[in-house]
Length: 170
Image (cartoon, rainbow, N blue to C red; front, top):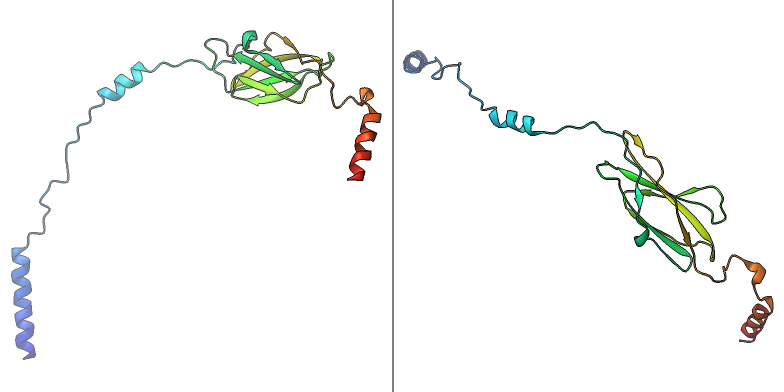
């Protein structure tokens, strides 16, 4: 049985190999046509510009305000400037050095907790990857008149004593 089976398998294998074509049916070479005209047109229509430091921002006085002991300052970028962030600086209300109170992308900022009846000077500068602008013109804003709770020289200590005495009886 064994030699007959081996002979039969060998014959089937020879017939199989004769019927099968082992050559590729598709040519290994092919044509590729790319239409690059839309890409070239898009590149030609691009407009490039050199990144420069922004121009100094412009403070908008009609949008600036004071309420109680807070001030709101509004500004706009100089036309044509590419701005990534702004820095708002405020002095101490007594003509001292300027301090940074805000850094960010917004063009409006409210600063709370200032002294009452004080004049604050504010200025803004813009910056991007290429550099920073000069400062805007300074705007002066006066907080409302009122008693500043941080100024204890005018505080009525007798009134406080009466309040504490009434609280201790409760």
